[in-house]
Amino acid sequence: MNQAANIISPSAGSVTGGVRGVLRLEAFAIMVATTTAYFVSGGNPWLYAILFFTPDLSFAAYALNARLGAIVYNMVHSYISAILLAGASWLLGIDLLWQVALILAAHAGFDRSLGYGLKYASAFSHTHLGVIGKRT
Image (cartoon, rainbow, N blue to C red):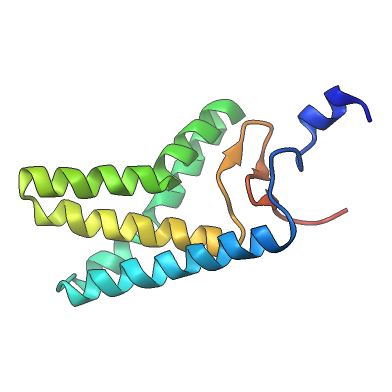
């Protein structure tokens, strides 16, 4: 097999089979756990509803170019961002940051449970969970 073709292939670096299913199920569990934590800790339903899909606005960076789009999208959709916000909430004593962190983690879990993974710069549809969209 041609190594160069393997490097640029959308499936190179994407999980498949049972591992993909486990990652999606794990993401669903994260969504359920963080959503539960949000509401158990007294989170406002309106804030949750307003902010839940806000991270998807990060795809607008793709209008500039695919590389920047992937970087911005991945920064927003990484669990690391939610963990950093949660840490900042704890350090600064700002409850709103904790709520936003839980919503961000729930959103990332939601997206990944549907198969929308972290993006590669090659195309919006190329993710660590495989190619999304129409199969050819």
